[in-house]
Structure formats: structure tokens, C-alpha cells
Image (tube, rainbow, N blue to C red; front, side, top):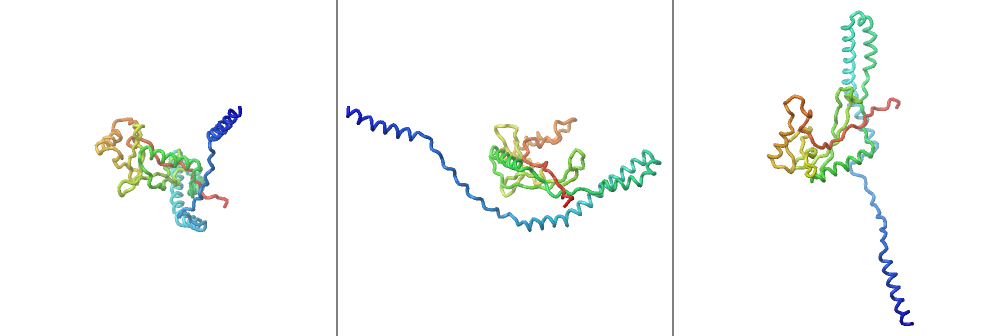
Length: 251
């Protein structure tokens, strides 16, 4: 009996050790290293100075130009009213001209645009995902100045905005690009010039394939084409539609 008891004790010990080794190991949280400020960070004093420089050197030019267009629009409407009813237009022309001059005189010059933080994070994730799938590396991120058309469909017609677009390096040059996603299993970057016009080059295709693909994208001369810009078919990587804001009038 003693021998049996002596044999059981080591077995129980081994069993306990085995059970202990099967327990999942909890990983200690890794300490995140603090990120130093990028070298391109500027002081608040510099930021204020640059903002004021724009106020003095650019805003008045934009203001005068856009206000002249608005005043011209008022005069055109006065002329239309006069042509429809000369007597009525002549009687009320001066008053309407003054009212329209005041109503159309001030153009809100945009001073900044913004996206919510999540949109920017999602955008960065999206373009990285597309670039990885297309087997290319994003070399830079460009911020283009842009201007909306004079069209009432836009919330802020004629106001300045920005476009954000990634670029890649090919040889000693950088190119804007979008993604040819005609084959979901073979995404390929299509290179664009600095002004977003096509270069007739798709990375990963032979010259004849690129030319053929580009030719198939060219606008059709037949009536009722399927798309107004068919040679840009594919997945764009350019971000716009930000919220433009003029300076607060109460400051």
C-alpha cells in the first residue's frame, strides 16, 4: 500500500504541472513609444503670421474679382427686367440696381477647409489598401488648390477648396495615379500627369496593352456616350468635398 501511495504522488505532481503549462499565457501590454513632433511642425506665432499674410495679400484680390462678377450678374438681371418691361424697369431700375449691388457685393472668401478626423483616417487606410493591392508604394501625398464652378448645384460656387491625391514614383519622376479595377483580381495603377490628365501608361501592362486599354477609354464620337469621361474609368484616389469656411464675421 505504501508503494502505491508513493507512486501516486509524483503522478499527481506531473498532472498539475501539465495543467499549469496548458493555461493561456497573458501577454503584457506593450508600451507605445512616444512619437516626436515632425520637423515640419511650425510655431503658433508662425501660423498666425502666415494666416495674416494670406489675409493681406490674397483675400483682397479674390474679394475684388469675385465681387465684380456678382455686381455684373446684378446688372445683367436689371437689363433683363428692363427688356421685359421697359417702363417698369426704368422706374425701379435704380432701386433694384442698388439692392442687387448690396446683395451681390460681398463674396465669402474661404479661409480654410476641413474634414472630420475619421474621414481622414479612413482615407489614408483606403489609399494604402488600394496601393498595396496594386503592388505600388505611395511616395507623397499632394494637396492641390482647386476652385468650384459657378454652378448653383454647389453649396459654395466659385469658392476655393483643396484636393488630396497620392503620388507614386516611377523612375526619376512622380505621378498622380488612379486604379484600373476592371479585373478585381489584378488591380493596376494608371499614371496621371500633374494636372490630372492621362499619360497613356498603366503600370504592369505592356506598351501595346496600355495603348489598347487607353484607346478603349477614349470618349466616343457616337451620340449619347455612356460616360462623359470614360478614359478615367476606374477607382479614383482623390479626396475633395471638404467643408469650406469663411472667416467668422463676429471676430
